[in-house]
Amino acid sequence: MTILEFSFVVWAGSLIAGFLGALTGLGGGVVLVPMLSLLLGVDIRYAIGASLVSVIATSSGTAAAYVKEGFSNMRIGMFLEIATTLGALFGATLATRVSSRAIAVVFGLVLMGSAFLSRKPRSKNERESPPDPLATRLRLNGRFPDVDGIRNYNVQRVPLGWTLMFGAGSLSGLLGIGSGAMKVLAMDQAMRIPFKVSTTTSNFMIGVTAAASAGVYLARGYIDPGLSMPVVLGVLAGSLLGTRVLIKADTKWLRRVFSVVIVFLGIEMLYQGLFGRI
Amino acid sequence: MTSDRSWTDKRMELFIGNLLRAGVLLSALIVLFGAVIYLMRHGHSRADYRVFRGEPSELRGVGGILREAVALRSGGIIQLGLLLLIATPVARVAFSIFGFAQERDRLYVVVAATVLSILAYSLIGFAWSV
Image 1: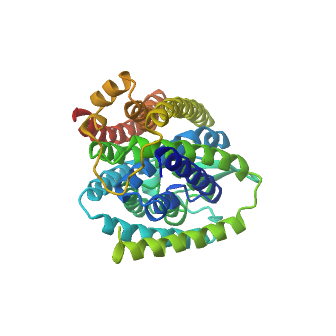
Image 2: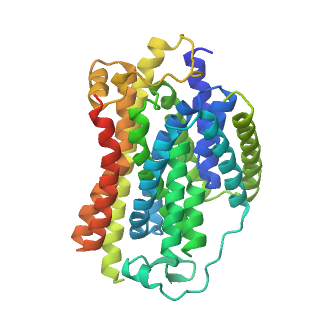
Image 3: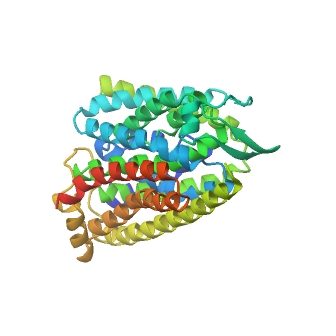
């Protein structure tokens, strides 16, 4: 393929990845890296470098739209970003030490895990739990506009959530993904933060987390301008389009199809990592 | 939480949100400009990313990228756009330090400053590699 053709194919694929990622809430990175490495034969280190940059573009580009909804909690986000950025530094450093095959294996497992998570029904967190003293001291408890007026929520199990966030950050740094699914898991399931607050706060955190690994990636030469260019422009356009459509579309069947695709990509990634040519 | 605090929170978040969007827009334009030059000059060469070589040293550090961009070389221009993109979340953390300081929330000034120093640690390693 000539560079012109290659750039167009990557741009179109990234557009679709960004669009589906925004619609399903799983982010573009999870399909982007398998697409680049399995279908187009790009070395996985270039693929995760380009993906990481596109993750930042999506997070920052859609931030204003999320803020207007008024769900995100800046204090929760900032406090947990200590964990995710430390994790990202650890993950990115690890990425430069382990083999491409090991990265592919972990990637395959994470793909299957996030497909499983996306099928899980979101928790209700209806009951107002009693305040956790640590969360109160850290001023994490908040309120958000729900269907029937303003609702208060009390954050639970802060140390567990923090630890999970370190894990999410490590995966983000190791694989060049946003790891939004794991961030939402930590906030929604472990810390009992309402789902809408979790997803919007997670979107904010993804960009900061990715920026922490970007320094390591840049210095190691993982971020290639020729490859990152179509990826960033495609994912950005796709995700902005996706957040526009999101409000109207019924995403239930789409999430189902998408999770099947992700399981398939996960198996392929795992296979290539264990026995194949990656 | 007083309504006063959530009002300032919201205003601060909106300002930051718009700042991020402007940053992303500007960096996308720079990347697009670099893309046009890149495709015009190299569009008909063969694309090859099968073997990892790592970027040349002039595209791994701030100084080198700036020099390449000023010389209007496509790789440098695109990389400059990507640098700006990476800077947007860093700017968000930096601005929220001011926001928390205005609210006299000392605890969160420290929290945000901690996050900023972790980011700085990661990026400085890269910035010094000329």
